[in-house]
Amino acid sequence: MKKHLRGRLTFANVISCIALFVALGGLAVAATKLPKNSVGTKQLKKNSVTTAKIKKNAVTGAKVKKQSLTGSDIKLSTLGTVPTAQLANSIQPAEPTHLVGAPGEPPFEGGSGNVPPLTPGISLPPVGFYKDREGIVHLEGFAKVGAGGPIFTLPPGYQPAPGQLREYQPIDETAVIISGINFETLHVGSVLGSTGEAVSLEGISFRPGA
Image 1 (spheres, helix red, strand yellow):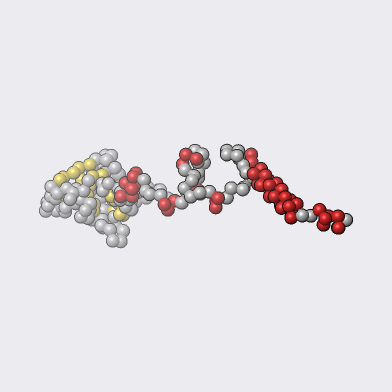
Image 2: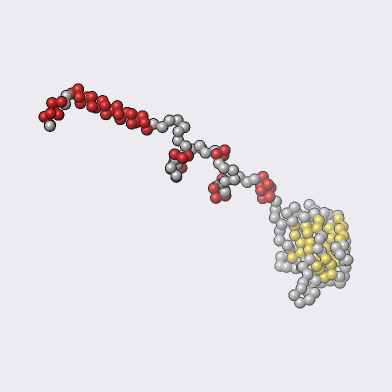
């Protein structure tokens, strides 16, 4: 058998066989080449498209489903401050109430003080003042007026404009704020009330003088 094959193996036969194999291999390669636009979603294996295979900046906003992104998908530190938030950040917060008679705050004058508890466990708000976000001064609380005249004196920056005499009548009694008027017995920026009366300072507000 071997002798029979050797007799038939010639140079021409070998070359012909090699050419045949090359031709068949070329057909196989050509058969695996995919036509244009022939691969769709059905041909893609699940999870086969990875981050590394997506071209940089290839995915645009138009390709993202509306309302599909959440806060966890966004790097918040890269976002700027919206204009309304910038305005809110520029507004000064309302300061805490300055309680009259407390350490470091204006004292009561002429024997005045907070209204005593009405009954055990029930008290009216104490006398105080503060500035809101817009710089408006607000008074609050209920005072028991002593000898009459000043209940307490507002510090500089919390007094009405110089030369003004402002009078308030929140309920039945009267509280008067004096600023810029130097009477013999009154002080600039004093909050006054009638002798022995309980005076409400709730709802009294004004813009302080420069």
